[in-house]
Every structure is written in C-alpha cells, then in structure tokens.
Image 1 (cartoon, helix red, strand yellow):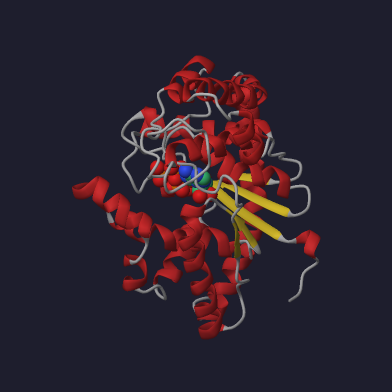
Image 2: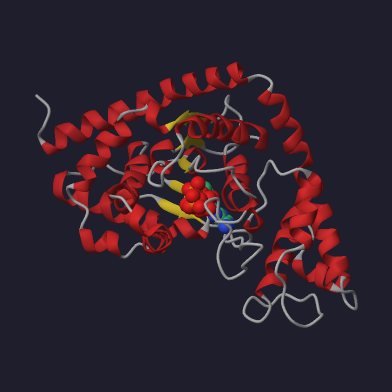
Amino acid sequence: MQKDFKNKVVFSAAQPSGVLHLGNYLGAIKQWVELQNKHKCVFSIVDYHAMTVYQEPKKLREKILETAMIYLAAGINPEKSTIFIQSDVSEHTELAWILNTIAKIPELELMTQFKDKAKRFRSKVNVGLFNYPVLMAADILLYKTDFVPVGEDQKQHVELARTLARRFNNLYGDIFVVPQAIIRKEGARIMGLDDPLKKMSKSAKSPANYIALTDEPNLIKEKIKRAVTDSGKEVIYNKEKKPGISNLLEIYSLASGKTIKQLEKEYEGKNYGEFKKDVGEAVVGFLEPFQKDLKKLKENPDKVRKILQSGAEKAKLIAAKTMQEVKKAVGINY
Ligand code: AQP
C-alpha cells in the first residue's frame, strides 16, 4: 500500500543500558527530533534490550526514566510523537517469539554487535544477547514502520528486520511493511574518545570513552582534552590516517554547524591543543540548552511518568491490532 510521503511511520529506540552519550544524540536522537515534524513517530525506551547485559535493578529503573527525560529534553514532543517503555507493551515480546520461529541461527550468528559483545562479555553471554535482533525486528514491525532512523551500528539489525518482514509476508500473507533504515552521513558513527577505532559506546569499560549527555561542562572539556589523537600536527579530516582528529572534527562540525572544510581552514597552522579546547567549548555550548531542560525534567519525574503511561496506551493500540493480524495469519487465534 502506497502511503503519503509526509505521513510515514517512523520507529526508533535506545537502550537504557547506561547514560546516553553524544553518539546516541548525534547519530540517532537528533534526526528523531527533525522527523517528528513530518511523520508519525514512535520512540521507545527498550528496557528488555538493555537486560541482555546484566543491569543492576535499581539502576535500570533510574536509567529507564532518565532515558525518557533525555528524549524529552532533546526535543521529542509527546504531543507529536509517541514515547513509551518497551516492557509496557507486551506485544513486543509476543511478536518476537513468533519471529524467532522464522529467524535462522546462522543469520543471527553473523551479527557484528553480537560478535563484539560476545567477545567483551565472554562468560556472561546469554541467549537474549544472541537473539536481541529478533526482538528489535518485532519492535519495528509491530508499528508497520516505514523508516528507522539509527546510527550505523544498527544497520545490520534493520536489515534483519527487513528479511524477517519479507519472509513472514511470503509465508503468511502481506502483514508487515518492509522498513528502511535512515542513516545520516554525518554523526552516524561517533568513535570512542579513548580509542577512535571503535565506536563510542555506553557499555565501554572506561567513562573516558564517551561524553555522557549528563556530563558536567568541565568534565566534557577534560574528556576532549584527553581524547586520543594522532601523530602529526595538522587538523585535517582523514579517517584512515587521522581517526582521532577526524572524529573530533565530526563532533565539532555537528556541534557548531560549521562544515568540516570550514574547520580545517580555521585551524590551519594551529595546534591540537587549541583545537581540542575549542571542540570542548563547542560541545558544552551545544549541550547547554538540552542539559538545562533535562535538569528541569528531573525535578518533575511524575510528569514524565504520565507521558510514558499515555505513550504506552497509544503504542498498545497499534501493537495489539498488528498482533491480532499476525495471530490470525499464522493460525493461532480462534
Ligand atoms: N557511537 C555512535 N555513533 C552514532 N550513533 C550511535 N548509536 C549508538 N552508538 C553510536 C545509535 O544510538 C541509537 C541508540 O543506541 P542503542 O541504545 O540501541 O545502543 P547501541 O547501538 O547498542 O550502542 P550504545 O549506545 O553504545 O550502547 P551499548 O554500549 O549498550 O551497546 C541507535 O540508533 C544507535 O545506532
């Protein structure tokens, strides 16, 4: 069915597996805020996904609420978009079970994120971590999603959601929309400050890896000052030869609105120290209004809980309808 371009369904989410970082903001949330003006947007806090790596229960509870506050402070408007917690809508796990029956083990074994985390968490690797991409496919397909705005690391998972949608439709009839990932060119893969060859990650061992969206201004400046850079002196963009400086240039460009070319010119003949100081200031300035709003929201958690409750009700209406269609199609309703 052809839909009006302006009225597409957009779904995306973040895991409350730690404090959201600048990569999450620049790679994903920044786009969400823009998309909500044109499309029907559904944004979830995917707590079941976070559980694929052990979370201390008290902290998880706090992180779920904080993630919702981060969405709101970043500009997600609950009047325009649906914001809800994944576990409040039980259809996500119900559909995941059904999709598990059509997902293939070798397909999941190919997932880079699983392979990476399996290496990092070794003995703690659980079945949930392995089939997390199937739950993610359920998250997306339940809302008959057209577009999934994500960072580059999630591209492979969206591909799997596409495969499962097609496979399901072939087996049981046309129920799902085959979704499309939207990945921005800039900011799609912000790298770790302590290791610019790996992506910035919430679950990194050291907080020096990321700029948490809640980091104080002085800490942000300090982390950028200490960011791993490359040999040489020139501030130029070259991801292969200068991954550290290129990452900082990308962050600076997104935080300041200046192009990378403009910045390269501005820093001709200047040293890394001056450059890093200015990147720190640009990031602090960029996050300032967001951090102010976040502080206000933290003073009023009940308001946020209400938004989440009403979001869950709205999401449930769509999810339950899709689930009914799915059950009918596979032959398990009566
Ligand atoms: N480094 C990044 N650069 C750009 N975008 C990124 N995203 C994640 N890391 C970067 C995007 O942020 C959205 C939410 O991510 P997520 O909560 O689903 O977690 P993730 O992709 O597994 O990576 P994280 O945030 O670093 O968490 P951990 O360490 O727990 O895996 C997604 O759209 C993602 O692409």
